[in-house]
Image (cartoon, rainbow, N blue to C red; front, side, top):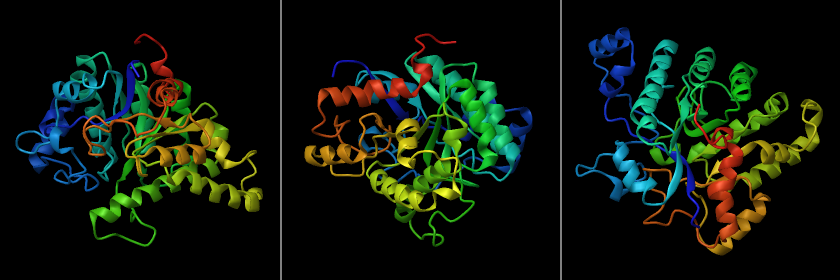
Length: 353
């Protein structure tokens, strides 16, 4: 495919906590320095884990790439990316303090705008949301006028299920500005990441994210979010793909038996998913061979659900194998260009605000 692709999941690395200081109020700069807060770790992505950064993308000391020039060389120029969406994974939702969480989210968003978006016209970004509803709405309203922010991002395992009515002011703001919600793999560890308690190993936690996505998606559907906000799009980032058909089968089957409980759902849950939900293609959780991909696409029942992503700098493929084998050119164009354009209204504008 020669048309410039749209990469829906790029993760700019933060060089250090001090990188955020120019974008924070004096109170927070002083507070963080006095308290000795030099980093905010997220166990979801331990820095030295092989999956966290592809080996050939690490620096000479094994460090993660954290400069615009590196992103340009490793992804944008290498694979003819016309547009790339930055999804910062700084764990702004981790602090219990609403004020500190909001300060981190504001700083990260302003850092992204000044040091990445201003540096390359091909880049767009997510609005990183803090850990509270009121502050999330405020951050959406603050950044919505800058149309380079094309979606807002939260984690799949947070304080409360994402469909709950407490979240609805966020969805109202997003719908009003025609901004999708991105739900990314990760947790702020308010609750165990498995349904049976806390795991012992990173492998367990990493795998448990698929259950978090299923729970979040079920919550959005059954609470009636897509009925209340018919314009809202939701993008699942790093969720995997193959779990969706069997999950929807179970959800639809159960809905048929207890649909009286959710009378606002006037059609099967699978139809809401096909109208409102999209998934990034990396990491792909099936063998990457033509026959398997054909079966997966058949089970998905739509060629509009998947969005292309390199997931830079995470290690989910080798060399230049950015897409699975066996996808024909028409389907590749859908995944790499047409579906992202249909999902993100601000990518269709053709001009920046």
